[in-house]
Amino acid sequence: MNVEAMLGFIGLGHMGLPMASRLLAAGHKVLAFDLRQDACLALAAQGAEIAASPRAVADRAITVFLSLPTPQIVRQVIEGTQQGEGLLGASAMKVVVDLSTTGASTTIELARVAQQAGVCYVDSPVSGGVSGAVAGTLALMCACPRKDYQAIEGLLAVFGKAFHVGEAAGLGQSMKLANNMLSATAMAASAEAIAFGVKQGLNPMVMAEVIQVSSGANTAIRDKFPKAIIPRLFNLGFTSGLMNKDVQLCLEEAQACGVPMAIGSAVGAIWNETVERLGAESDFSEVAKIIEAKAGVLIEVKPSSSKE
Image (cartoon, rainbow, N blue to C red):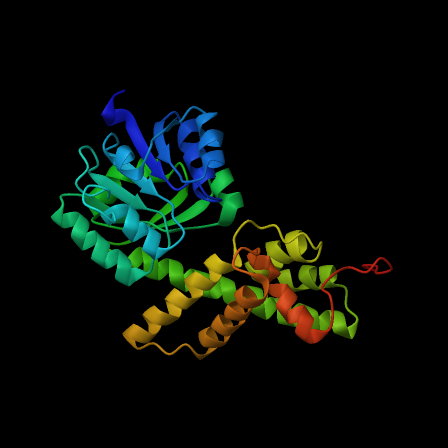
């Protein structure tokens, strides 16, 4: 198979699998790897080739996308735990596009190591959730030299709308952490506000409708409460552990650069508690359960409730 036409994709989780699927649907040849056999089989059924290891992907694909859950795993895949295992030094790879959320410090270091190995490191975390990954409507926050961005802009467009936020590695991560801190805050604060209204006798669905066209509007109220929390589905496809990871990364980076985050710290405590009580694999919409338990109320529409 022509190496020039091959794209690598490592990490077929909730976000990675639909993103890799979009590359296939756009007509690209994809060589992928994931530790989970079921994810590999799902992508293979769509026409992808599955590699035996991350290094095997980089030995045949010039451009390799990463969609991995933690900074530690990103580092392990790129550098390897033993000589010859990591992506750097592979025979084909010249560009690595990191779609993961790793934090600026890790990304800056990995970009430096990659540059020393002659590899372009594109810092490009994404936002928009599983639904955005499936629909191709993600926001991509891309930081790399502009000429490198222009070279891959067409590929990024397969996933959604790409923004070139700067040339220095780490700026994409800082943009993503700022966004996710706001998203995490909106989820927690909205749960408190809706729980307050429900305990006072309001219908939560009506509350969501009113707030969405009022000054308190946010994406949690617009989408997450009506679709996942009020119907008691809790199925948004992003884990509490990953959201907590992003929030804590933001707090660490903020402290390191001297930006106080009093509100962010309170939000971080709520997400820590969510993980401790409900587990890292719980859906991140379940943060509402923590607020409900303390308020002694369920955010749901009671059978006798009416919008009138």
